[in-house]
Length: 531
Ligand SMILES: C[S@@+](CC[C@H](N)C(=O)[O-])C[C@H]1O[C@@H](n2cnc3c(N)ncnc32)[C@H](O)[C@@H]1O
Image (cartoon, rainbow, N blue to C red; front, top):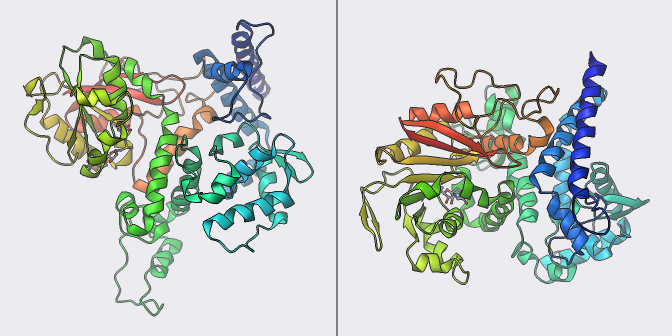
């Protein structure tokens, strides 16, 4: 039956390709629109012809996104089926090198150097020379040079994974994937002000830098943290527990490491506290930029359709808990002028948040009191009532909105924060959680069997009926499962399945009543009501 399965996967690819082509061919114009080529970089801040622009935009069309995910899922499954298992094993066991080489690509400014070189590309000797020149801007030794013979091997691994092109022997050029890491700065700008590399960017270069540093290094210690009694983990603790003279002392207490991050950075601090140390100032700034990049995971505007906001009465209050600078509230307040939004976050965040919107059209929302800020720790009880300018005292909010917060915390902490919201909720207050919901890798036929009827919006499988694809579309959604393990490595937290989130919410007094999925990603909008 294996050939039948392989043929079925092949058919999935053919059908999905036909679907994508249909969408592209249906576009008006003198000649059919082609899909963006992998060989051609699409730089975000460059001027593009109307065809290239239209082709890129159409790649986000919902029908194209679904077809593309079927192709990726089927290709991943086909490759896993027919590749010699030993080679798959080596690839999995050595996958860290892809992260490392991507990190190097970004840190060495090779993408910006290759952008300036154009489609003909640049020889590794010249790339190495340019990398050295740019590093002089960072105050580095002018004689610092990258070894071109090593550089070619790093770039070739990336080309092998389609992250670049080797256009001629030892000559490399950017492609559609490497262009994603482009900061948009010229090599001259990077040389003059390397510290401004991430300023005004979409954050993806900073995201690569952060993943290659804190996240990658933490992940390397995952097994030591999960199996702390093993010899490797034990010796590691001893190694990190030396006295001033460098000798291991039996009287010194063993460090209290909870997360892989703690092992990797030899600190007992949590990630966010550690980031606030003076020596991590640069990392903290990079983190802020990287979070902008991470927003590409979920289209912020999706939240407009994710909840029946228009059914809420005039002047209903939505509390955006852990709302950061208020990006989600601003999107919603523009779409629903009849609602009032209160953005709660840590004092350091709300103190600077209004200034972020200073010269933007959204500043008016703040002036009119439609969006306001409150310094509020989500591990402390909510204020007993809400005083809204122009509305007065409101006893209960209509909605507690939490976006991207629960995945940063372990279960016990999420339970605490949801319980505090439940304690101050009214009988009709809703909780809306905007987070990734991880589907299982098998069809979820038992979901909600205890609750009787299936939960509105919950899916059993994302795979097309009758196809041999994994229920979660495997490789097509790998990025969210990788994010899940990143949360575990750095924060002892996780992305959750619907089962996990529902159980956790219920333990804090909230009953999940509905879930809707964002288009083209595993982000979801989960509504819960007082249980
Ligand atoms: C991943 S961000 C999400 C921000 C925002 N909801 C969004 O979607 O853009 C997590 C937020 O939780 C906030 N946060 C962390 N600890 C907090 C606490 N104890 N109380 C309130 N907010 C906190 C952070 O400052 C940050 O803004």
